[in-house]
Amino acid sequence: MKAVFIDTGNLYYCVKKDFSTEECPNPRIDFKKYLDECGEYQRCLAYVTQQENESQTFINYLSALKITTNVHTAKSTYFSWSVGMAVDVMNMELRLNHVILGTSDRSIIPLINWIRTKGCKVTVFAKGIPFDIINAADECINISEKHLQSESSA
Image (cartoon, one colour):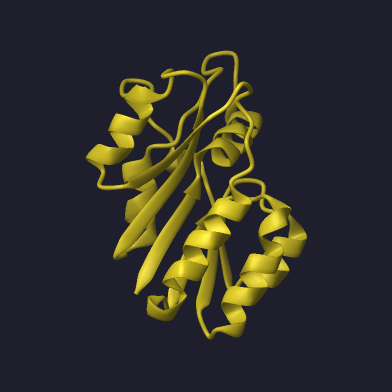
């Protein structure tokens, strides 16, 4: 079974850092395109941090794509989902043969190493993937402009 685990906050900040321009100060990932690039998968979980109910439209968008959302309400917009992702991967471990991790946070390296010891393929699909993650994973895919929402759909 192939499963996708997406840290939406990490991807948001990495994409904004690399693709933000004067004309498009707030670039966003088109998660339909993102998932199409993942190929066939059986399960997709997204990890979302919100302040109050400000992310409800985004959560509805993910739900419409059949993505299970895990939401944490926080006072700040940053919250590390690495442990939550790791727990979910470990809970599904016996059924998985390919894990796609949507984060470039270095704290997932022990998780990548653990998954690989179980004979499972690990792909990291993110932006700004550090060299040590590239070395740890079986495959890395960098988010490019083709994975972003067009200005008309943003």
